[in-house]
Structures are given as C-alpha cells and as structure tokens.
Image 1 (cartoon, helix red, strand yellow):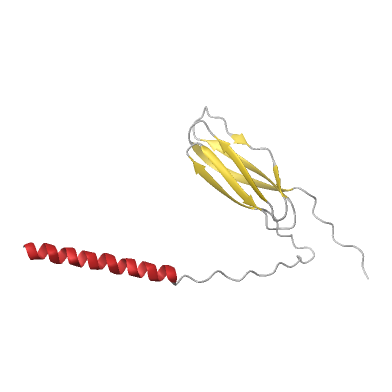
Image 2: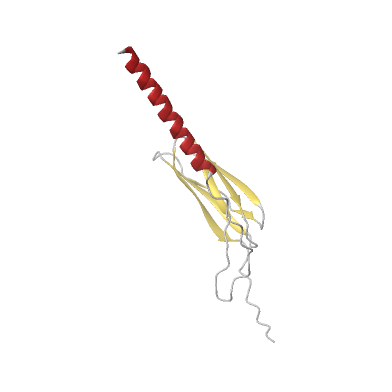
Length: 135
C-alpha cells in the first residue's frame, strides 16, 4: 500500500511536469507579431481611420482610462462611469483632446462599486475637405 502512494505521487509529478513543458512550448511557439502595414491616405469617399485606442482599468471604486491616438486627427475622448448602487451618482468626465501620437489618462470613481465604464470618441477638428483643385 505504501508503494502505491509513492507510485501515484511520482505519476502525478510527471503529469504536472509534462503539462508545464507543453504549456511552455506552446507559449514559445506563439507567432511573432505581424509587421505593421504602412498607413496610406484613405481613398476618396472612404472614411479616414480615426479614434484613440483606449483601455479602462477598474480597481474597486476607481476607474482609470489610458488612451493613445495613432492617427493624424485629434480625438476628443470622455470617460463615462456607471455606478452599481442606485444612490451613487454616475459620472462623465470633461472632454480631453488626444492629438496625433499623443497619450491621455482619464479618471473617475464611484462611492462604492463600479457597474460599467466606457469611453466615447468625437473628432476634435473637422474632417479635412477633399482637395477640389483638379488638373
């Protein structure tokens, strides 16, 4: 009976070891990030790529949004926080302009738990008019 327990422990150890090796191999075999495609001007009539890339982090009753704008147009972002409790006030941040290749951090909070948080985007400058000067 004593031998069986040692045998099972050895078997379990080997199984865990092989699983770890398989996971490590899978992580190492992940494909390399794709090469970035150079940005080209949008064709006439097509909408221009627009909008800062944002992520929100919720920690307890506090929300932080991190936004980076990779596009040539300024993006006006706002953080909206919806609180879980009916008596807790939902909040909307002041608009923040995130220029080309710029970064912004927005914060909000509830008194208690956060139900949801999201970012809205709006162009801060008008879309450039198509070039009407022809040959």
